Length: 194
Image (cartoon, rainbow, N blue to C red; front, side, top):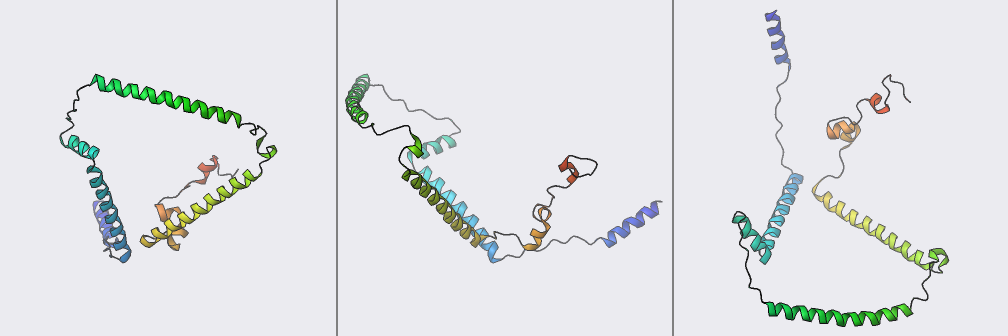
């Protein structure tokens, strides 16, 4: 029995082809992809450097490298200066209040043409055309920007899988089947379709 198992094992090893790692070929597409990733990493690093050059960024870096021990700068409290600042703010608010009251009085006189009749009976059907043009403008804008983004991405990568992969479906793309057992999808275990 042991000889039979050894014989079967030897036969399986002999018939099974050894797995040879495929040598990856470096192509222009790969070069573009590496260049894109390198450029993005360099851009992120540049943004981090620029952010650290600001006053707040410098303080954040100092607190990060000090291990979280930060010293809060203490300022002396000047009561007279704060009182003056508060008094100026109150004067400014009272002056703004008078201005707001005069503008509100003007607006209240000009609301005679506002009705609650709605868009159809409010005698403003031109507003529908304005909104329709705005919606169409957004749709065209989105289509153009999406097309431009896809064209730029198309320079660095393929946007469509090869036909052989598409014919295989989910197994070719994800190496798994989306609905492996149709009986489980229908909820019937006897195999009868609903």
